[in-house]
Image 1 (cartoon, rainbow, N blue to C red):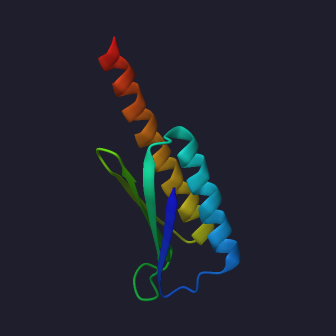
Image 2 (image 1 turned 45 degrees about the vertical axis):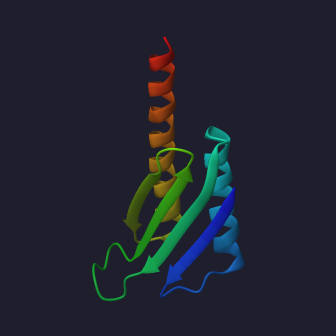
Length: 102
């Protein structure tokens, strides 16, 4: 799967890149038909004080796409929560496919 990391007001370090790649690998395990993962990370220095970092993921699949976003005060926590939301959507999509086959 192709991984594209975009950032706004944040310098993407190797540690951030590795963390995003690990999260996307977890998602790829749930659905091998994923073509591309676009991860957008941004730091809001003007808005809410408690939720500075925002992470959004757009997973491009064959068929429908999946999108989720979350904001937190810790960047890594925001990435993890967004990954969990995507995992839930992938599991829900998989359950629907199983029910339709019955």
